Length: 445
Image 1 (cartoon, helix red, strand yellow):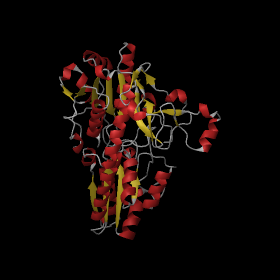
Image 2: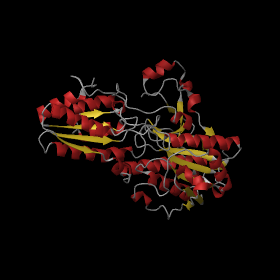
Image 3: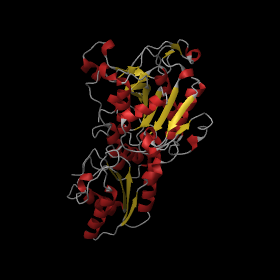
Image 4: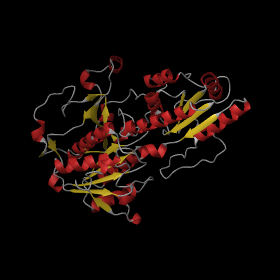
């Protein structure tokens, strides 16, 4: 949904390890540059509000308007690169671009800051815990040179919480000064706890996150990495479903896409192909039966046009499935029922009851989408995020993530990044575009 108006400068302030007293190795590249539409000086800020009405509603002076700290290299840094040891971990589900981020971090740390000691922790937060017995990986420019050609993550990943105290114990034993955490909201909550424990113990360990969510549901960033690749691949499944549907009498395709709580992939993939007749997202409950329900609408579309395609996000319509047991995964997330299969079953029953010929194809491309290499757009985006994360960490920022807001790269406190979920606004222009592209009614009720 839309970001809350109550965010102020206190909410946007980023924690630091202390004063920066060391000249940055990048100083010769920086020079004296004013803020422009392409660059923002480190002493400036990126305004949170971007319309006159939002600014007017604040009722404060210009200097008091809330703003994000800009990302980018600093002229003075906190950590001495020659004595800095860095750790990198990837957590949660796969997403296009994970290897790109790892590669970007390693190359920036070694090439420009001359950091010589970088280790990768295996299989998510399990990699810090002794009882799992996972070894670490030495990360060098040579070892990451071509990993961006492959999907997945060379470090492995896992779900589930681990004891932040044990994690800090491990970081302390290995003399890690900076930990880069690549993961979604649950992972970032874990990173916040790691930072809290380290601070309470007086450990000088900076924790910097690169937010990863294929669903694009992290707030306060324009878009999460891997999302462009994901909806591009998802659009191919819609194309296939449309080809199948138009090649048979009474053809109907159902495509189930990722999106536990947010329907961004379903919306963007649909707009990329414009072959879908209906998009169902978690943000909008829908009814199957009745004159205004989905089933009656699909009946009309098939009878009028001979075919139809339905795109459904995995978290949509969960309330329709009441005869299956509830459960949770290792991260504590509710296990979702297969709404695509349920809708397909109900469509078949309805068309049979109406004696209408139906040839239904069900497509679920989830794992094909999660594990592919990043496309060129995400390849560029991931390396820029990696650069921003390294600059932030070397300057002593901690308990924060990097992201892009209004097309500017910024620093965001972890607490703010996990404070709510980014969702499709049913009153926003994205959903309006979906309605225009599909021709479906605003609601099925």
